[in-house]
Amino acid sequence: MAPKPRALIIGGQFSGTFCARDLKHHFHVTIIDCKEYFEYTPGILRAYVKPCHLDALTFTLEPVIERSMGVKFIWGEVKKLDGVNKCALIKPIFTDSTEEVGFDYCIICSGCNFGPFKPMGESLWFPTVHEEEMKVSDWPHIDERFIEGRRRHVLEEYHRLIDLNKKKANILIVGAGFIGVEWATEIEHFFPDIGLTIIDALPRVLGPLPDGAAAYCSDYMAAVGIKEFCDTKYDAKSPEFWKKIGMPNGADLEYVCIGVKASNYFMPQETLSEKGPGGGGWILMNEYMQVKKRDGSVWGDGSIFAVGDCNYGCIGEPPNWVMPPVPKISYPGEEQALHAVVNVKKLAKRGPNATLQKTWWPWGAGMFATSLGPHDACFVMGANWEKNSGYT
Image 1 (cartoon, rainbow, N blue to C red):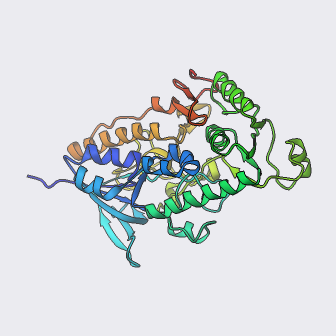
Image 2 (cartoon, rainbow, N blue to C red):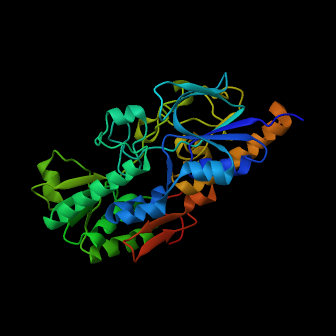
């Protein structure tokens, strides 16, 4: 009987744990993640205004992955992925040296960062977990690879908001997409003495989502006293900008809630996009979710896949898309993970002559949930790549 093939999964969050659960019966599965815990990223905004909520969003990975799921977990960072020799150079969390981990198949589920204006994408919305990122961090005293480091960061931000609330300070939120709107309404509910202003360069809030959703969120923010300025470009150095938004003396604190940035530092340049959100650096993939090179050829022998937020998010060029851009949210990442898992199984069973399953624009990419404080929310479903599509 042939030995089980080895499957390496980079990233132990939504897509990574999904892949492991499905592959574990027929593969020797190893998950590697930079941090020791799972975090439900869509709920992290609430944790900053109500720190005890962090417990509902997180769990330690090792007991779940190794004891409950029955697969191997490595807490460490992938420094380099070699598609030709099919091995990953990793640095375990408690050592100063690197090790090699071989594989027969690899699924990259490493996610992305959310700070487009920071050198390596650092933001409050996702932990700072890569070594090079930590060197240029705005909070170098905190190690968010540990769950207690993440908790410390949440508590620091919470106490900063408490102080601002006591001072009746003014906060500017840049970006009125679903993150910006949710963050503004969370602060307003838990810290009502803070003055809040939200701006966006687009004509209305929530970008491409339906008009009904935008109107609902705008009405809610107006009702609770959050000032909204759309069709307004952020220019912190311009006195005219501050006058236009009714803050001639500037803001006491600014939060940037726009965009994403790639964090695929371990991948060779030939596999990364030269353009895209945050300046590019996204993993290129074909219709089968296999990693490809800039010349369009498959990287390695086709046994390496990229799913979810780490990949380029689209296939082809406008207007003749093979697959239009997919939003970087958790729902489509899990659906793409299923597509990759199906193809890994096909390759393991039939070899390079296997007929692989093509991916498609995931239905889950059309669902957007935006909380408006703890007692109200706006949910969009059935959206697609067309602006204003979907149902509120």
